[in-house]
Length: 216
Image (cartoon, rainbow, N blue to C red; front, side):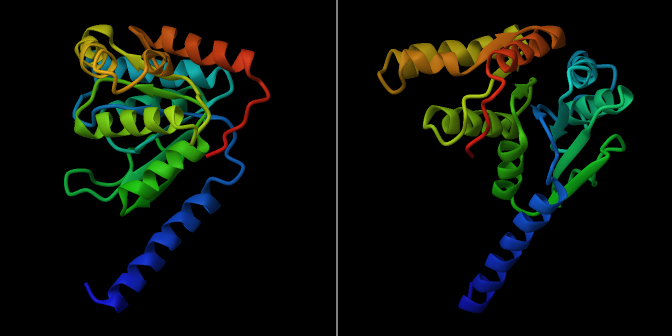
């Protein structure tokens, strides 16, 4: 890539940040929801994410997702159906065509890293439903920033005990027991089984930390 092309790419990245910051100014308190794009309406976790979107907005929070199908659509749908804020931070992918129809305000991104900044900058909690590689990427990025102090340790809630238990066991036996992370790092996230439990974790946290603001 030539120096000229590098410069234009930097400007495009800058423009992507500016557009996102301008769009989401004064957004208010929101919760990010991560999860598989491949789960369909009627599946267990689609419906649970829809329930979560509905319940969390009743506590004054908006919902931010990747704006795509599956878990993202479920959470946006639940938020919109309850009259809450339904936000999408999309990514240009060949197998995802624009925002799902339940997003009220959103931006499309070319770069994954600019997209992640939007999630982290405007969220006061993170709920992670079953998903694939992209979901794992978002989960571990969020945990890393909390662990290293680059973001406030807002609640990170994994939904689906059976789904996540193998990963957590591996973290304990390989990372903790191997001395690669501290045992207290396991406190950076919680595992629940239902939308109601996820809402409870988030609401309880914020009731105890009403004055805490993001430092991302």
